[in-house]
Image (cartoon, rainbow, N blue to C red; front, side, top):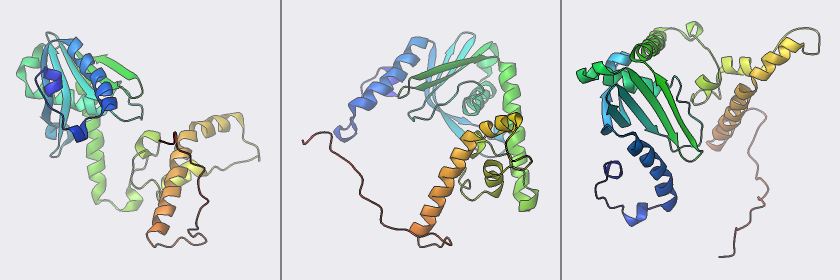
Length: 245
């Protein structure tokens, strides 16, 4: 916050990292060039948007006349899209609801800054379009809550790369296993339309295979049993120092 506002700040030596300074400066420069009224690290109540007690913290919000910018710094290496970004959509919807002065907003700009992979993206939308997307998110949240009281057989599963990428159950999920690993039909060779479907699964298969491997390894490492598998000592890696120093 001090960096964005241009006030004095001191970083303890043990936390001072030149590489991080460089990457964060990219984000700071992006925010500063926008101008307008700046809000930093603002906590937003998202309970009305999600139907249960919840909040988020917006990295930077800039109000400039008819325009509202929601900017999020992503320090990770996994690419994040600005278009239809659910997190920033909810932040923007929360701001539009909380602050009556934002009734004058005609354009919303959702911005992602990922300096470590060079991804600086902006998606422009309108308050009406954004509120509609926020309603869609709320309906999905309602569906998820309604499933909590159902038996497992009645759960709704829609495995895809986005839904399964960070799901903690991806290594043991039968529906993901079926979707990623199996196909049926005749003749023995895949037909062209089946190849299209198979190719569409490639990313999902990678997620599934990696999750299964980590789940099996984790279970064995913690003393669990997986029939037919055991831990053995691996070969030493061919690692070398970059320099003798």
